[in-house]
Amino acid sequence: MSCARPKQPRLRLDPQLYEQLRDQVVNRDSWRCQACGSMSNLEVHHKEFRSQSGDDSEQNLITLCSTCHAIVHRG
Ligand SMILES: [Zn+2]
Ligand SMILES: [Zn+2]
Image 1 (cartoon, rainbow, N blue to C red):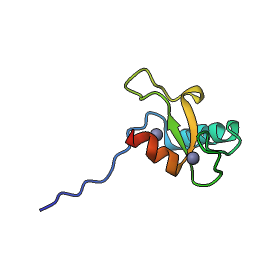
Image 2: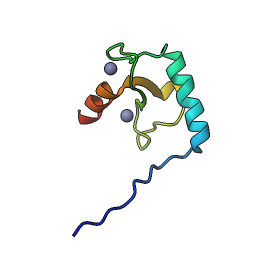
Image 3: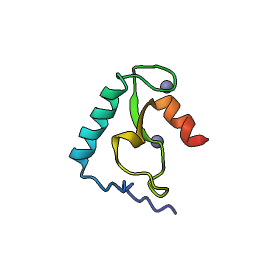
C-alpha cells in the first residue's frame, strides 16, 4: 500500500513574487546556466539552503539548467 501525498513546496514568498524574483535572477545571468552556459531548461537554484542563513534574495539565487541543477542537488 502506498500513500501518495501531494508535494507541498515551502515557499515563504507568494508564488507571484517568487516568479518575479526568478525572472530577475535569470535576466541578471543573461538567460544562461551559470555552470555550463546552456540557454534551455533554466531553473533557479538557492546557493545557500534556507535553513543555513539562505534567504530568498537575488544574491542567494543562481541560474542553472535542469541538468546542472540536478547534479548540484545530487552532490
Ligand atoms: Zn547547465
Ligand atoms: Zn536548487
